[in-house]
Image: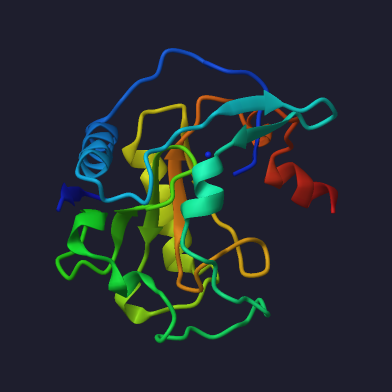
Length: 203
């Protein structure tokens, strides 16, 4: 995949995993995100007042981001995981051009990266797959592949791609994935894993 230009609760273990590396994708994303911040496109300047790892089995990381609580757009009223898209509600076809920072491998600007105007972390952006199709917030094969492809574009060990579904704190019912950099290890990076082939053989 090519590209061109145009902090909520997380699991954590330890900070500063290693010296970070950057690809051209990382550099362009960070440059465009910081440019949008400088130009006042966000609802607030990201300011995480405090961070804390909770005791317990999973070492959850909690962060204090007061501005997000008071200045974010009011969430959509979500009552079902199968709630249909409603063009009368806020959706990502209504983004202004200053919020759109990358067009991903197409000429019709259907797959884009935009800033999250109410960021929770550094470079908090939104992957908007097939944006103009006005799809509800349900994972599609195309969107999952695009999310995975973003990892192949990045060299950073801190990049995170996340999906929150309807009735699980998704505030906009329009297909999107979250993208940001987090300098803490997440649970899936250090818990024991088993290869899926091994699991299939044992079934």
